[in-house]
Image (cartoon, rainbow, N blue to C red):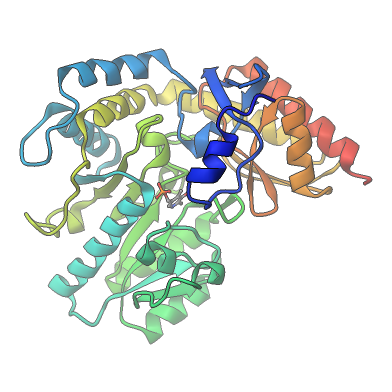
Length: 393
Ligand SMILES: *Cc1c(COP(=O)(O)O)cnc(C)c1O
């Protein structure tokens, strides 16, 4: 393999990633090519980011036109792309206002600040606790690490901010107990735990938590950084559950490949943040927002029903197949538990030209929402074949 950047990267880039031994050189749609010219079917989309695949023409055109008009203005002035994207998100979700940042962690930081300030304004300064779920993932800043309900993230960087309590996912009694014993302002959860192993919350759990939150005066925050923007088969995954949230955060797929984070604020909290209370230099960047608007407009009912059909195909093909212990997830966010070590299965898939990623000990699929059916079928066949062949050691 031609190593164009490996040595330079190893020498100069902070050593925070265990990269695969692949250097991506180009791509189109759901196909990517390494520096040797080897072709891969992309099932990771840059971790659920490239919603319509690599170098999507419509999206690239929207972004480039804005780049050539003006690429940035700061939030000292009005600009149309930011306003139009906020309007589209509100109209599609029922949210009243949107705050834009640049990442999932920032979207969650905003949600946490909103919950804390809302509690101060309406309940009292002591009601700052936010309940999150064990096995969750909410980001890499100091505060979102603490919000993340996994002990492994709570080392090395302390002291961490207080005010996060962890309940068991799909165990309503554990949420109820924390609410009863502590002064809380919000419950924050991923509708589908992504990094935790592609695990959807049960409908009863989500409904019960929302009812409890309403009764006890707590906000409901959904972290849809990964499962949002059409990936679940609905525009946002909470829409599959028939509940109404107070804050929805998203990022990854919203930008279609450029950095953006959004905290959608529903009625209760639409005016919690006032001028000067929060901000971001790059937040609402015109080029990024123009691209995101193109993405959101294309996630229509037709695309969503294709997502659900493709999802069904993957579940039907892999569930119960030789070497596959379980298939979990929602829409085109799928976790596969293999009998053989998933790292070995993954390595073999990569050899055979398929690029999934991992979630804990599972193989995780996050293909482009518009992946051609033929490519999806070919990739799933290869995963099935590899999992079967490797099952008996
Ligand atoms: C990826 C992710 C985040 C963090 O997003 P960044 O853009 O990396 O800051 C937060 N929450 C969930 C559910 C995620 O999947």
